Length: 328
Ligand code: XMP
Image (cartoon, rainbow, N blue to C red; front, side, top):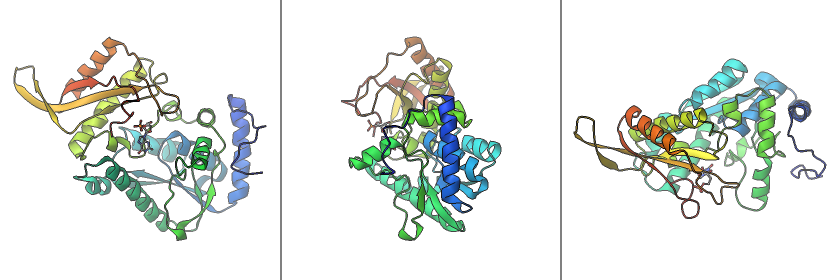
């Protein structure tokens, strides 16, 4: 039997009871595979790696070494939440790496979107590799591979190894406890493992993070505008019952200033914040949901008054095609 093929007999995990059964089976399987050896995991705080972390903590406790790399392109509150949930509440062995300056210095002045992506991806591997070398006696690498990753890598759509690209001498045996699960099942398991809802039901977030939403060459100032405006948008979507209903929603800040006027009647030059919200099944095509106009004006008002340096907000009405979901 191919371990990378989901058996037809495998029941879809839709209930807490089925999740508990899966958890018990995986905890036993992990214990048997890993024994008393150490496992390394890149923990982003996304649902897949968080569920893998929680499963491994249950199975082997401190023999799991979680590495959380803060590349400076995460959303507001994310690194703090990873530390709170895993180090403080689950008592995990968590290495927090503040690599913010490293990433932002490498990205300074880089305008081209694919070059930005390559720099972020390559630097991530380098930081993770350095941490892996600091750790002693690691035998396994855990990954949050899920079934769609396996299906897509079979079709040649994408390479599924999240930290693929590690040098030969750091090629560990893999532990991939959720590799036969679909995303909705991973969420049911995450809930049963006690992970917070905003982690379990988190919207998709690209690997290069806010980096591709701070259009063109990233500056620290504009990155903060993206982050603060995104936090307001997420807060308002959550407060208005849209968080679980809209597939992905975020803010973009282009690299030019718009002319505006302040309450005293003085001319200003400030950033434009673009709101983006989309619904989709597979991210190949997407539609823009109809949102209450009063909510859009409320969000506009909050962003222009609460985020320093912003004088204009726009809402992107473009479906995919013709626009991609991200702006670059
Ligand atoms: P686009 O912009 O191509 O986005 O319509 C489709 C989905 O993919 C996400 N996305 C990425 N995810 N690395 C990722 O991990 C990337 O470089 C990347 N670019 C886009 C995007 O957020 C959307 O969900």
